[in-house]
Length: 390
Ligand SMILES: *Cc1c(COP(=O)(O)O)cnc(C)c1O
Image (cartoon, rainbow, N blue to C red; front, side, top):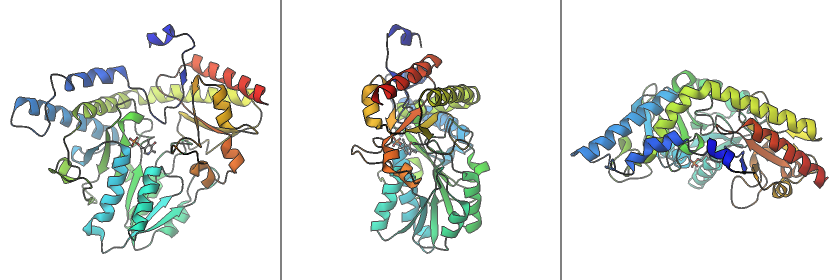
């Protein structure tokens, strides 16, 4: 990280829930697969293809190990959005579940990848229940239990929320789904690599993840699809050659997959120490801002929350205006983070927050390369900007 010290007043990046910078070691691992090791992993009749295919299988193993899966349960996609689409539409389209019914249960605070896919299925005759959350962003297990019917094919509840960092009790949710005989899918894009997670221990049937949220490259993700107890049936959305066990055709993104394998191993090795360091910095940020600025409210559960995320609202302050005054610090206002159009956050709205409260909300998301100096500078800059606006 020496390069950081060469830049005077370098901008500070606290938007790691939107995307993370790549770890330099990951780029090193990927580089040969752009250059001399460029083979198509499906062309196994010569050494170029075999080399690529072997490297892809190693990466599959690295990723499987991170989440406690079998290599045959890892399906490579272009990212979490595609993995989410494949999980939900793939199960919905499967004739195996057709007799059961056409009902899905999800939550109002899900990522748009889930909500827009469910909304699309509604236009095709599916019935979707959107569970509410409490003021802390958590769903009620009793409400979930009441929502599941004999026709429910799939329950979709994300692990950690991208805006607030709030972590849903997915182990209990998975257990409930098992008892009620319905499949459980979790969008774990924000938690894989940050939180311990084991698909068998947790009882997860399908899980989506993305490399660029865990210091890997953009354009590659994974859908975990359980093969045993139960064997999950998932129809392909993209046809053309039968790659990835028939669930996702198309030439594999070999360099991206190698990068995702490398980050999986890095995350597994560093998770404990790294998460403790990031938690300390996040807590320092939370304390510093609360000490220096009056009228701060934390959005979401403080107890059940990712260690890297802090979402606050500042009374009487419009976050867009505040961010314009601090252009060198990259954070996210909840209104801007889901789409190009400025809309008040559906996540904070579901938590019962007023429009004014949402307009004052800011998300800080820390990462592997965040330093204590950056946190101190951020507290100073925000305190000064809020004071001048007030
Ligand atoms: C970023 C994100 C996605 C989308 O991931 P892509 O790989 O960018 O398509 C989906 N769900 C959550 C929770 C996310 O944070």
